[in-house]
Length: 425
Image 1 (tube, rainbow, N blue to C red):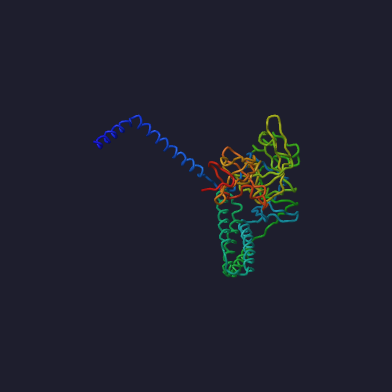
Image 2: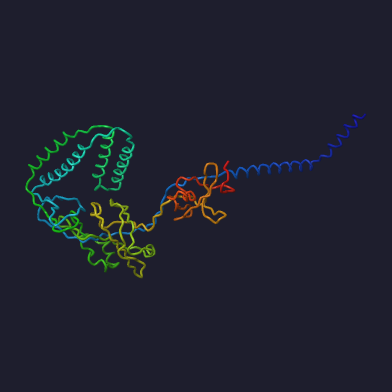
């Protein structure tokens, strides 16, 4: 009887756990589970970070213009035929120097060119003969040099810079030779020297009479003419107008004359002139130096001083740059597209999402140092919507450089609860 009563009481109690009660219990359990999962997610999110490496980068601000080169040029003339230059373009010569030869026949002219090449080869082989074999060692430095020279050679071909190809070819040859001597290879070029000397003697014997052409003054020699000589008066540089320069930039070259075999550039300085929008160059100052890049030419980047700046009400500015550099490539420069580098910022590239301000109102980033977060300051020199170029003003100061971000530092882009000195799980 008692057992029956207990069963009955139990049944009564079970009936009290109604459907609403069951739903309520399930809801409470579900909410508890969500709370636990949320806590785990927050804990995991606090320990989850996204990082990047600070790499070297630079930002350049430039303005594109058309440049026109103006030199104090004097035409060198000769009535001879089959003229061969005796010196390279851009070389400095005196008034008594021979700058070219005139031959009665084309064969003799070709002989002279080959004889000049032979003389260069003999000088090179003479240098090789004087080199002593070096004990074999690490040749990686020579491998790197060969690779760099080959890359430069390929780059010159792709840019159409054929004037300097022979020089770069010689650099490759010298790098390979240096590696050979470094590995103990003994170079014997006696037979090559003998053959070149014999060839030189034969060429000299078969070369006809020639006439020497003198420079007639002191300056830089440039072979041939381009028809733009005198378009702008070199001596009137202080009075050039925007209209005159525009006409020069659009000028058609005059027909060249066969008797004009070259030019002599007088003076120590020559000029580059262009027209730019005033708004683009309003911060330039006379006397300052700027880098000029010629992207469509074989001419290397040059540094030139701003000689004068003149603006007009139309929003145009006449810029005159002065330069004293001269070489074979610059000697051929006349009218070409150029870029004036207005600003050039070098430093480390940092994603803007990583830049923060700490409790001391210092701008910086959090970096990963072992298993610890560390706050490092940044010195922003250039910024875009996505990234900034930063520098370390104390990179040469052992006691201070660690306070700023350095090259290859791993900095945190995304993360929660970032703190200086916090342990990273």
